[in-house]
Amino acid sequence: MTDNTDTAAGKFRPRYTGLIERYRNYLPIADNARVISLGEGNTPLIKLNNIPRVHGLDVDWYVKYEGLNPTASFKDRGMTVAVTQAVDEGSQAIICASTGNTSASAAAYAARAGIRAFVLIPDGKIAMGKLAQAMMHGAIVIQIKGNFDKGLALVREVADEVPVKIVNSINPYRLQGQKTIAFEIVEELGRAPDYHCLPVGNAGNITAHWIGYSEYAGVTDATAACTHCDGQCPYADKALISQRPKMLGYQASGAAPFIRGAMVDSPETVATAIRIGHPQSWDYAWSASRESGGWFDEFSDEEILKTQLMLAEQEGIFCEPASAVSVAGALRDLQNGKIPAGSTIVCTLTGHGLKDPDTAIRQSSADVVTVEAELSQVKQAITKSL
Ligand code: F0G
Image (cartoon, rainbow, N blue to C red):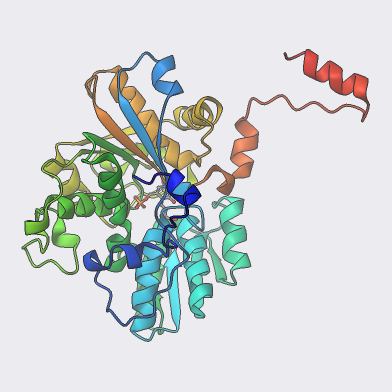
């Protein structure tokens, strides 16, 4: 644990320079590769205080606030590794299909690397903050009249014909970077949580979490998605934990292939980040769920938005709608007893609430009053609500 008084006493910490430097021994990046980093990772693990109290729940409940990454989502963990590798291989351009966050992250890391980014997004179906990011970082934005699944199919096809490197999570380096979230959680808790809850869209992230926990446990399950593991976990004799969490994957009802048990052709949800019907990491995600003894569940848009607001109002934590699914899931499963009292839970809050201000303002219950710029009126507005 870092003791803040150390700094006051004149002892300084080395500058944090991102997760490739930090987890080099666990990542398949060449020692002499030029590292493309924006200082991603090292996000806060925040203990929920008010929500458990209000609901009378006996639980050790944390959120991993991935919205505090450089481009405000967990994608940066994967992008630093994927772009570092792409540049090391000589790529001059990267490409992705995206519901928004991947495009923002790809655009930023491409800018950092000095290469070109092409992003395919579903026309009119990505949050404004994400579009602004992709545009500001100089990506070539291609809006398609189709959803994410169609976009990814096109990306696969076009990458066969033009020299661009795919940086969607079908690129295994993405999952390698994203697995580091599990490392950070284990290091801070001194163990793995009993349950890990997260939203599932294309299903890369649940796969990456499971790889991370498995590597810190020194076991080989689920490492089929691993690029530097040949059926034998290279970290078997370095195991830090003996127990891995049950992985709980939550989806929006309108985009819930894991609950339907089949692909969904026209996914629809207010949580546009997870508006995905044909998840690419389908088999890996099922392995993670089964091997861990976890489960999948679904939530209506109304429940998702209610939970987003609850986190913002009761804990001061602003996440985007898709991220709130993880907390909605944990809360429901605590209340129905599927997660027993006394458990340690971590929910991944995958993206920042500022990504999607339109949805936030539309559903906020905040009382915005307009008054004359006069003391009496301002005073009246305040005393009315005291
Ligand atoms: N939460 C957020 C905020 C996301 O942006 C995504 C995926 C997910 C959860 C789901 O993660 O796909 O690994 O299961 N966003 C991708 C994108 C698809 O294009 O930004 P997953």
